[in-house]
Image (cartoon, rainbow, N blue to C red; front, side, top):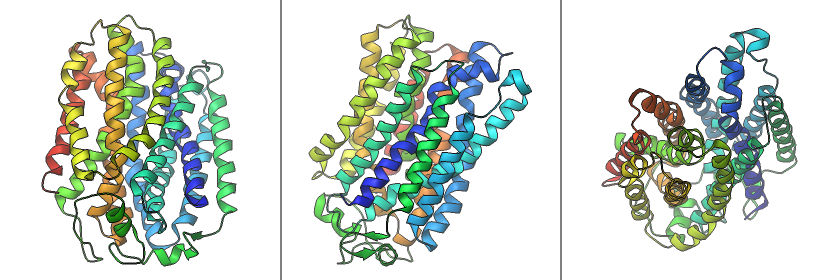
Length: 419
């Protein structure tokens, strides 16, 4: 990979650490910001703040997607990472309920909103930008490296969450913010040259399917895909856009169920402690991280659309019985369910961006892929923990998370037909 791609991946590690730290520390922060509520309500309120992305992510796409389409995306990536770093640092400065009362929750909400705007711009632009490298002949493998960096950042956040308490929860946010701002300095120290002496501004005008080494050719040379020729005048169909929405949602649902929700949900319906779940959480994140690249090598010559549909089916069909039998289940069974979701979630993630990038013309990809992914991740993915905990609290039906996963996966399968 080019040095630029390596720098994007390293910056993504820090971005994901900052973004996921709140989800892992939320059970510790919940009593500090909502002390007058019962424990389960505290968790629901704390996790519901993740759903603010339903507002912030579309805003982030509209602002930074437009800037990336009309200016140099590398310069935009510097701004987005700076915003992520500052908002993460400010998370460690928020006063708790004991200091300012309910204003603490209000301040927390606004810091999450501001951070979400910049985080979505970073994620959207970086995930597409790294696949545009003209010297890249194997986009599936490059995408796998990028997605594995997501897990590296998440694993760092999970490991950190094991060692913080109600007195030390601010320290990881301060450290994450400082490291992200240092990554901004590294980005400013790099030039705007990509590939073999090709300027990024020149690449911006390159179309899919031409003979200059664009992604359209590298996908065709590196793996088998289904798709159609694209032009500047093309607009995404409603089916294609809805596929992006639900696919982006499923991407986050598999992650949230495995690495966020089950850490608090399993102790509610089994005798397994949260400490045990967090210990295995970090282990599974490391397994997830090392699984991406080997799987990408295995499937790089396969039919991408078929691989995506297969992974969706394997996530949907057993999800309801898996969670139904989790009531009073053993640690081995819970880990098996987590392993299953992680494995097929990785398969799905390896080919997702490469497949979706074919559905949109070059000129509009930042906007449409960004908006669809933002809507899916915010409305469907990031709300997983809060919705599933609320559903279980109202029904005490252990299979509620499985029903949620099954519905989202089947919607992806439905909109993938004939595409």
